[in-house]
Length: 161
Image (tube, rainbow, N blue to C red; front, side):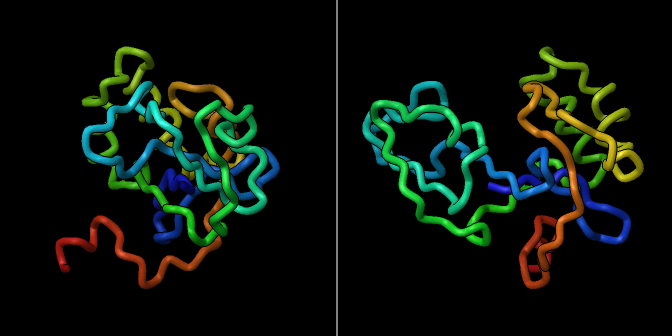
């Protein structure tokens, strides 16, 4: 997963990148599990599971840490195969609602984060470092996304589909 953080006025995006500016990947929990299986820790099934890894990725937290006993890692993906996740690259009112209604709102000051970090990102993005609202170091910095997203269906386009 590659994380989009802000949509800029020119309709380009700011993306979360590694500290050196290279692509950064996150490995979310399963997007599908078999019936009758449960998840532990909301991310890891209690059975042997496959973690498809993006070619060349050695720095993402899930890949940099030691293998878990029931985890099988296989390099199966190229950068362009990664899911582009725009949870934060929404309209301001949607992000404010997301922040205010988050189950994490008691763990960080959502209003301050919204105004000081997310809202000002189009002006301050070159200087923003380690800005994940809950986990320091998870999102090292931002950069402009230099991937062509033309032809990709974005949430605001779904009304037309």
